Amino acid sequence: MDSLQQSGGTSVSGFRDAGISLIVITALFVSVRIANSFSSGNRRLLADDFLSVLAFILLVCYSALNYISANGESLFSSAGTEG
Image (cartoon, rainbow, N blue to C red; front, side):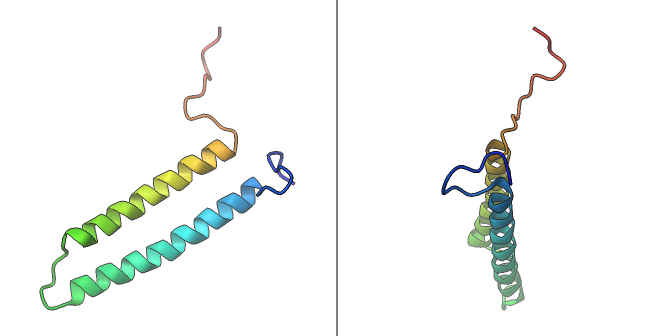
């Protein structure tokens, strides 16, 4: 059992697994959207296609930062600095 699980809460591994599965589903939808846009008559990507890719990248970054904070780690660790 993970150490950060509270009563009625989600474990860190469950949080990670849910995030990964949502990212995979989102990647499938974005890739289908890009494939359909590229295979249409004009064969070019428009602003909404680039925005969906940007939103996917931001989702991955947000999920990674959420996992790091739920795991109790710090982005700016004080390793190597002694006070």
